[in-house]
Image (cartoon, rainbow, N blue to C red; front, side, top):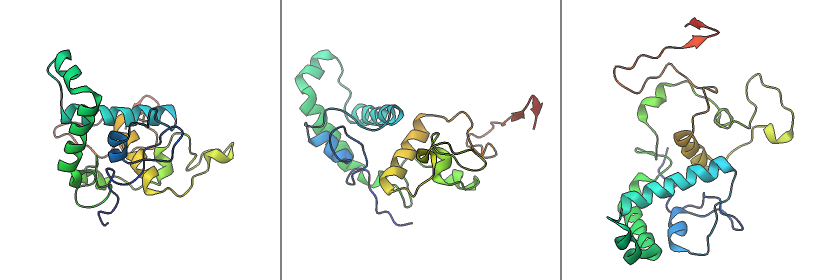
Length: 177
């Protein structure tokens, strides 16, 4: 798939009282004061923003932080994003936060990665549980949510092991599988 959706440039982050915004917008526009989305999305996005800030510049002490200030930190984050722009594509040769080895896992619909969506042989109680087509912005959030929060085994493929030497032990109703 073509590298066309870049998280730095494309709007995908929900912000309260605004449309979705890009990572560049977050670090360059001070009017964005509060993340939007559900609580899990807010935490996942905030963790990403913290990781970017820490990678961009970690002040040695509080004095250095005060001298730099929020604007100085934002500028360093923007410099970091410019430097690593090619690593923030959702698709392509080096997709953001995605491991090539996971391609061996069984393919699932995007709804399988959203705890509030009913897929497979699951009862649908409300219209909000029906799986819908997702935009690239929604898919970017799903990738971020998966990296930040495990769904306690919901519809995962435990047959794919990403750590060398690790042996997966799977139990169903007390019986080793």
